Image (cartoon, rainbow, N blue to C red):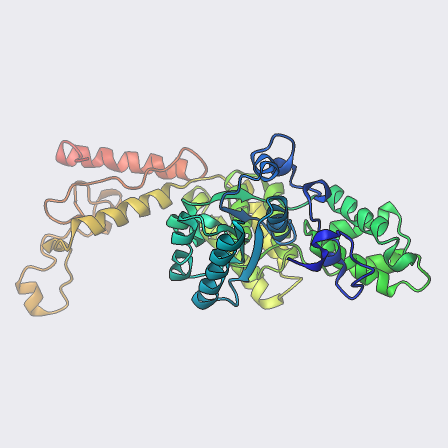
Length: 444
């Protein structure tokens, strides 16, 4: 365990250690935040206080206390503590840790907490290497991950560990942590003075991450000349801090999902909020432009065909102007799409037709629909009896079929009673009436 395990604030002994490390709590009474897990009568707190160890996965963004909780669990339960990083360790290191845990158990009957940081980076074989040793009680497995365990961890490992979700820390909690650091360290080397408004600004810039908040405070301390923290220094240090985004991770897809659902739900304000959150977090605007184009077809479709062109125009503007000017065009497109009439009729029709095409196999094209560019093809009857729609009344060949022989006549496309699709639906009803007049009854 670290040298600070017996003394929360070993700062005087090791002043060169980063502030975030010096401030790491070593007991539940010193831990701030995550009340939904560690509040009175909560299962995790009861398990820790009673010493009933079980394997677990801590899932949450950086700086929310995953590593700290693993240390506290080991100390509270009088267990040995071993730590590996999945970024650097392999099966050999896992075997060494297991052997050390086995020796500890034989020598002192103490349990061993094996903490694996970034556990989602282990492959299947590496994750499987823990299973028999978790089963026989050689070690208690505690993994930390910023990624969704359902997607990144083996079912076999998940079935043997309980998942605890850690939440980002709010500004009030981070302000308490910063104030606590100043009090415990006596103003950081006995000189730094900061008011609550300054600490709150640092907390907001940290965006839910306690480690980042303490690092920012330490930087502010290094830049203060007379021990008094100046607003200009706080603003300079706090500016340019990218929000939590994690391109390619859960938070990335959660935010794009929120953006898409805001548009679908006709909330221009919600769409703008999530758009700005993603841009503020460093998302590529061209990625958002591609998703806007998808929204135009999936959720608006023929209820307002202008949405697709507006989405294309916004993408073009973003490519031509770049950032930050181009983002305004994307915002305009998002607002239009959110306010437009909605229809997923084309989306549903496409999915149904694709499923039908995959299931029906390679049915032949009807002879009357085949192309006949050569004499031989014409002699074989290709295109024979084809009815040219433009020569028919209302430019519609009533009663004609356009599916393979013997295939049912499905109606994939069902226009909704919104926007332009009202007119489209009325036309389709009229055309089906012409079919019935021609054939007696339209096949469904």
